[in-house]
Every structure is written in C-alpha cells, then in structure tokens.
Length: 180
Image 1 (cartoon, helix red, strand yellow):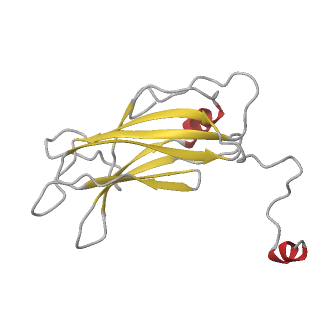
Image 2: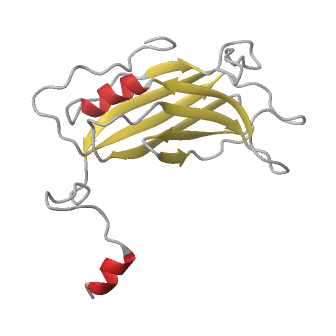
C-alpha cells in the first residue's frame, strides 16, 4: 500500500463473521519535529475508526516516542463500510490546546478488508509516513520523515456484542416504560 508496507490482509476464507474486534497497536512514532518553544515534543496520538476514538498516553520530551499501546475497535457488522482509520499525531501543551502535527490514514478499503478477514489474522508491522494538514510529509528535527509504526489484528468479538436474531433495535423510552 502507498505510504507503508505490511498492513494488507489476506482475502477472507469461508463465511464472514459479522461481529469482530480489530486490535490496532500503535507501537512507535519516530522522527518527530521540535514542537515546543522551550523543549522538544510531547507527543500523543488519537486513533479514529468505525465511529470510535482512542487516545494514547503522552510521552514527554522526546523526538522518538515508544507507545506500544493496543486499542480495540468493535465492529458490529464487518460487511458494512467503517471508513478510514486515522491516526493523528498531536503535541501536548500545558498552556493551550494540543497542536496537531500530522496524520496517517489507512484507507477505508484496506480497513474493510481487514474487518472481513478471518479471526486470528495478524498483519506485519506497518511503517506509515505522517502527513501534515497540507498533505506534505511531516519532517522531524533530525530531517527524517516522521513515521508511525502500527500492528493490526482481528479478534473474535466478546459474547453479547452480536444482537439476537429477533432484536429490532433499542426500544423507545415510552415502550420501555410500558414494559415495566
């Protein structure tokens, strides 16, 4: 895939299990730029996919952050489009709102293929280039392109996430009150 290697899944085998968990492990962000006036960079990342958001911890005073943090995304129906996986790299600041440094995007097509892949599949570690809001590569203090290292795998969903076949959606407050 453009911008990285090793994140493409094999085609699914057999029948698709619709309810799954996709685990995204953010391993590292290397070659960060100097973001603070008096210091280096205090990076953290926000991961957005399938209408869910997760944040890493903040790594203070570094140009090479080692996170090794895993996040679970529940996919209620793997046959539906879930959109792009967006990993936004931000710089934490005590005095103001976090500054967005750049973003890595794993395409909706690739994430859909991953969600449809067999449970137990794990991709190789992928190193993806971070891009600024203007689409340019984010360049670190060491003049190297900033890269995010990700690992993605597919897990079985916890029991109870898949609604029973007769379920028709959440009841209205009036219907809930009438059933009491």
